[in-house]
Amino acid sequence: MTMTGTGDAPLAIGEAASRLAALESMVARALIGQEQVIREAIVALAAAGHVLLEGLPGVGKTLLVRALAAAVGGRFSRIQFTPDLMPSDVTGHAMFDLKSEEFRIRRGPIFCNLLLGDEINRAPAKTQSAMLEAMQEQQVTIEGKALALAPPFLVFATQNPIEQEGTYPLPQAQLDRFLLKVFISYPEEREEIAMVRQATQGKVGDQLDTSQIEQVLTIEDLQAIQRITATLQMDDSILGYAVRVVRTARDWQGIETGPGPRATVALVRAARGHALASGSDFVTPDDVKAMAPAVLRHRLKLTADLEIEGYRPDDVLRDLLAGVPAPRT
Image (spheres, helix red, strand yellow):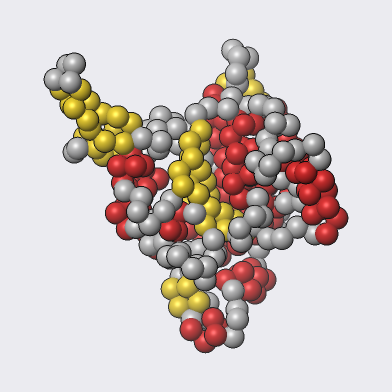
């Protein structure tokens, strides 16, 4: 199978995988010691899905998205979400033009290819509803007029843990629109030493440094990779395995509310993206297992008993994946 690349020559699956590997290596220059986080972000790009990044302040959430934007090219916007952020601050608004004596649309920062929504769980409900329309419908509505967002449109939203002061849980309907929820934790000691050396050697201030990031993909390349990801070979037995994992989660002990059918679709998309990012031209059960935690952790709610005992969704998902037999390949 082939796809169209930057030029007129078609791009094969192997070349698509190589370009994703180059993208992964480039982003790793800026974000040191977060290999799994970078891989999951690359998978989301390949699968054309939105990503929710969660971690304490200062662990590299914003740096990751800025590095991705620099390496991919295209239009990039950043929105700092605050409690007083209005929908028009995100989508834009109609304004009266004195010269033409007509109203015209002034487009907001959401009209881009890669949107960084910083601290998204600080915004009010009205603003979240505008984001939900953009994420699901790939459009925004201004003064009753629907305006399409140019593809690809991807949201990488960061959030602090909801235990932090001034944060609010996102609506479940909006959470369900994120293909993945990715955790960023503290780096290892040797990785933190390398990170601090890079951030302070010859640098003035504490600006996020992406100067070492070179563009390795174009938006056209990314769209072509997304098309090939969507058609990557997946045996019916693997598809059935993904369905069983999600359906099992709905009745698993300790899970009060399970994931819906959109989670199954997301798991299949993410598994295809993981396979291509791993250099494979077909999906295996290991691809499904690798992506299940990131796909499902924000789509289920644990019982109060487990939450009191300190269990996290990943703890339950680990047992669940061990209990669902995988097909032999």
